[in-house]
Image (cartoon, rainbow, N blue to C red; front, side, top):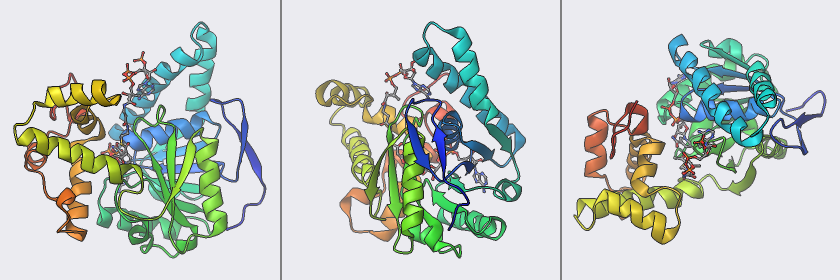
Length: 310
Ligand SMILES: CC(=O)CC(=O)SCCNC(=O)CCNC(=O)[C@H](O)C(C)(C)COP(=O)(O)OP(=O)(O)OC[C@H]1O[C@@H](n2cnc3c(N)ncnc32)[C@H](O)[C@@H]1OP(=O)(O)O
Ligand SMILES: NC(=O)C1=CN([C@@H]2O[C@H](COP(=O)(O)OP(=O)(O)OC[C@H]3O[C@@H](n4cnc5c(N)ncnc54)[C@H](O)[C@@H]3O)[C@@H](O)[C@H]2O)C=CC1
């Protein structure tokens, strides 16, 4: 990988300059995570193209980014409506939303994939993008649970491949896990880390192991909470109250399950169970399976462990 010039990306959101070789970013998938990553990348001065499957989906993503920005600016410029409008317009001005992934990667320095948590679908996408993207383009997956090396094999650019794992809601959560596989070059790793910092996040490094750091601890905790409720030891409401007031967590486990998406949690648990079937932490979870079967994915569908106004 080589970049013609080193540039500084000035964070609209931060006053400090953070050096990064990445200036043009394509995000594939404009759901919860893709739209959040696009927002923070655009608001820190990157040129961002966001891709999803239909115009209707990208229109919804655009509306959700604007809504999130309007919340950000209220905090950032509390008494300055003009600065609020300028910030939103500047950020939206850095964003293009479209449905064609192939044309979207033609001039990308970095492609971040944030589509459904399914290995076959991710591999198919990356194989197509590998043919279309320039030589220097770095690929990264935002997967929650799939080994990066298993996705990277679909491409011929293992040296320019890594993991960039953001957290939900991206504009608020200050962490990015940066994952390298044995093939990842030093230059690629440094570029991914620099990008994480340039979008205003603290980066941590982790091996390409199940769930990296956060999900390896958080997902078993959430699933154990479901099992605790299934045994009738306590109600979902009381478990949530207990973990917020007794452990200082900002959300209880059931609130967080609904917030992350029960479909995503099931994809994670099923994948881990398949690759490590005897691990008691990864055993299938009846209530989770039932809700997903009923298309109750949590906040995004209006119902999960709790009900929400859509
Ligand atoms: C599955 C994976 O692979 C990995 C994961 O992501 S795991 C999930 C990790 N995430 C978490 O654990 C989230 C835990 N929850 C929290 O940290 C907090 O509850 C939270 C930051 C989400 C919300 O904060 P809160 O104080 O509890 O609630 P809330 O009143 O809704 O928000 C406070 C402010 O935060 C900001 N905010 C919250 N969500 C926002 C968003 N999506 N965009 C922009 N601003 C937002 C707003 O300024 C908001 O104020 P307004 O409501 O006046 O706009
Ligand atoms: N939900 C969460 O809290 C977190 C999720 N992740 C990971 O991020 C990824 C995305 O998750 P979410 O944003 O929650 O999912 P989501 O369901 O909100 O969004 C996924 C989007 O990808 C689109 N998509 C699917 N296949 C596509 C394709 N071939 N081309 C273009 N777009 C496609 C869908 O239309 C959808 O809009 C997953 O790998 C997930 O594990 C990572 C961190 C946190």
